[in-house]
Image 1 (cartoon, rainbow, N blue to C red):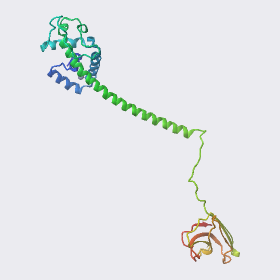
Image 2 (cartoon, helix red, strand yellow):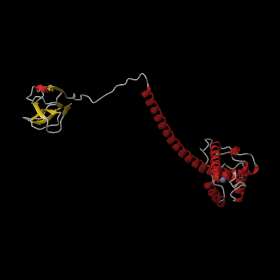
Image 3 (cartoon, protein in one colour):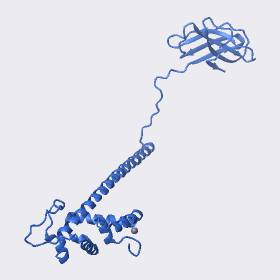
Image 4 (spheres, rainbow, N blue to C red):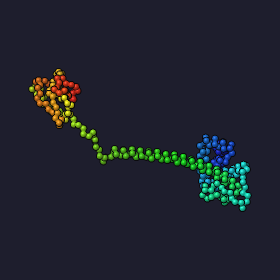
Length: 283
Ligand SMILES: [Zn+2]
């Protein structure tokens, strides 16, 4: 922790390389879990270290972190000094990591102490960075998944917006062809005309587009008197195959003012009172 309460950058570097003491590590984990600022800084450090892992350049690690690392190395007494220049260089597990083969002494700065501890240092860095690079890779994979998902959402929204714009443009285009469509082959509406002379009791009735009747049924015409008395039967009829029908001069009393004419469907032979519903009516 520094004076601002956050983890110092060199400690973050050591943390990233898994080189803090168990006690320090526990403190760091607890703090990082609750501190977005330090998490951001740690991500930066991890990024730096990942780059470093690929280039195997010492410059990427902060000076203070290196000092701390070397002190830690000395403290834990795991330093394996290089005996003599004649001795064969130990194989380092970093081979392939950088594409440059194993580390050589030239890869490290010519500092007395660092130079002497480099085989262990190389191993420690390689191990720490391998872990870090692994974490970094997983984070990047998760991030890529999340980015791909967001790209999908953006693509969907873009499509929706484009569709909405096209709808608006089509609806408001002056040159658009506009056609009204209705159900095809709608049956023609039945129509009829009654011509009536009340004082002579003369009636001519003509109907078009009448629907065919069920067997044993007949259409019946009714004169509905203006005085409110019962409807008077005015003849029965069957339409022909074209839906045409007529009633000519049915027997009617003279002098009955008509309020309306109506048509019902009755049993063959006709009825003396209309059976509802009245399927056609005209006043
Ligand atoms: Zn913090």
